[in-house]
Amino acid sequence: MVVAMDSWNLSALIDRRQAPGSQVYALLREHIVKAHFLPGAALSEKRVAEELGVSRTPVREALIRLAEDGLVNIVPQSGTYVAPIDVAAVYDSQLIREALECATVFAAARKVKPEEADDLGRILAEQKRHLAAGDHEGFIAADDALHARLIEISGHKGVARTVQGAKLHLDRIRYIAGEDSPHIHFVIGQHEEIIDRVIHHDGRGARRAMRGHLRLVFEKLDRLLWERQVLFATGPRNGRGVGRNRTTLAAARPARNAAP
Amino acid sequence: MVVAMDSWNLSALIDRRQAPGSQVYALLREHIVKAHFLPGAALSEKRVAEELGVSRTPVREALIRLAEDGLVNIVPQSGTYVAPIDVAAVYDSQLIREALECATVFAAARKVKPEEADDLGRILAEQKRHLAAGDHEGFIAADDALHARLIEISGHKGVARTVQGAKLHLDRIRYIAGEDSPHIHFVIGQHEEIIDRVIHHDGRGARRAMRGHLRLVFEKLDRLLWERQVLFATGPRNGRGVGRNRTTLAAARPARNAAP
DNA sequence: CTGGGAAAACTGATATGGTAGTTGCCATGG
DNA sequence: CCATGGCAACTACCATATCAGTTTTCCCAG
Image (cartoon, rainbow over all chains, first blue to last red; front, side, top):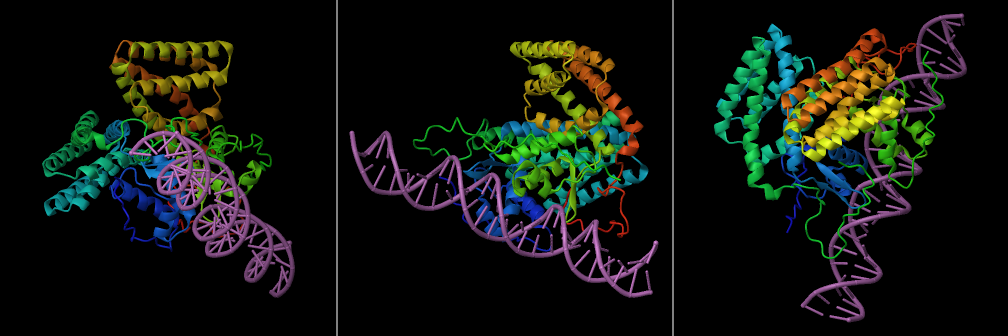
């Protein structure tokens, strides 16, 4: 049976001095990506609103945004459920990330300026420091910062947003997988090579290094995806658990909204 | 002064049998992309709701989605305005589209199956027919269908969504530009080459052809972008027109929400 | 006629009430 | 014991009311 999940531990309450809307979205997204909310869990507007101490309106708006990100499925007049990890969506996300980060790093190698090169070195040093200190959280943050900075240097800052959206689905597995150490040092080395080639305006080399880097990172996630495949969704899912008794199979559903 | 734009001609009313929410979003998006709403125009929740005969709630939700697409700017406690055509965003969109369509067409050449090849030929024939008949609308539709089908064949159907999002900003200029004929025939020829290479499993060739195709299409838009640059926004914009009388310049604004 | 300031009339943001639709439980009949 | 019909409790969806902040307008003093 489904785990009760009675306690959501949403004690990190909303700061009423700021607009609750964006906060609710960010909070729920984090909980879903970090697998605090398991796939299939129901996210009732009413309950979330009560738990967070806000009205249902901002909660509803947050859920709509999450549905666009593909993190929840909104079934009209039925419920909103945390989306299963869609294997196809994960592969799509990997393709998107690889294509965009390779394209931007190529451009970055052309446009990079000396002070930006220094900045890259600084972020990498920081990441090494976090690795040595065993600060996993900081390591991840530095990793994100480095990749984002490379995109920014390419002059296509807006692309970072799209990459971020794709990364959501990759991060969901990443958090389920947990990070194991052996790959980590490879990551540092690869970052070094990418930055080195960018600094020396070697666009093709930087692109090749980036592609290798992203594929190595994905390799582990891909293995996990197959090992625990049964946990995830491969085709169109009906959101609810498998426990149906006798209702006609919900094949012909109204599908009034265009939820992805 | 700003053009009055008293008549919005939103006579295409909402079908109350379906969920209004998605309809409002689609309707507004179309009007913005097709430049029926000009950049800078104010989209008041109240007025749009009255004009469409629905409540303000679904309108608000639609505006939030449009803001995520970068088509409108929501300024808290002030108003929602059609976003100027951001030159940087257009270049970002072009990079995204090129990177993703090249990556997917490469994959499509590997995976394409005979019946899919036939399908591609059928779509192309249809496009030729529309060109001969001077059916511009149909021509565009077939163009979109062809590109979408290629992405689908690659096995990364979800990527189409991201491409569609990027294409929004390109389409905005496309509609302002209007299509002139000389390029059109090049387009057909390039489509032929892409399909031909995909069918013959020539991934690299298909990718090269796709890149050339997308760049040629963008070339004209790019020229227009520079010719009429003054009409668009290059930096952070304040949304409102220039007609301010005496209020202190809204530089230090609360900016409570994280609108892009 | 000009400048300033207060109030009214907007705006989006949030809260809440009512409605249509779906699901699941439970009594009922085979 | 199992299958079925229906009711009750849920859901998301939309409409409406209220709130807080901004902008505009307009009147009056100088």
